[in-house]
Amino acid sequence: MYENLKKDDKICWEIYRLLYAASSPPADFDELVANATIDEKGQKHIPFMEHEIDERVMSLIIDSVLKEKKVKKDKWQMFKNTIYLGCSPKSRISAENKENKII
Image (cartoon, rainbow, N blue to C red; front, side, top):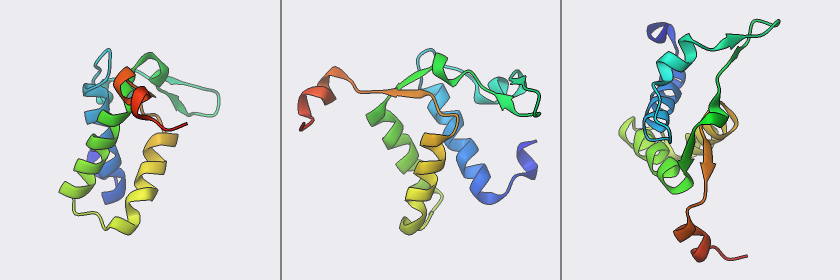
């Protein structure tokens, strides 16, 4: 399944794998996809709300993969939008980060 994806999709899948591995509880993204329920439209539903990841860790993972894959900076936001609006684990703001936020 993964082998037939386009380059950008492979990058997204790699990011999802790392995000779920770092989430709480940790999960294997490939297993989540394989065991996803399928609705009447044939779309897979991954229980992403059952997994949480610190927003700072999430951002670091995304940035590190994009840098490693030598994605041009002008495409970074497209990847981030795809990941954040896709089936990534829900993100949380750590107590440490809440204190440093400007409201």
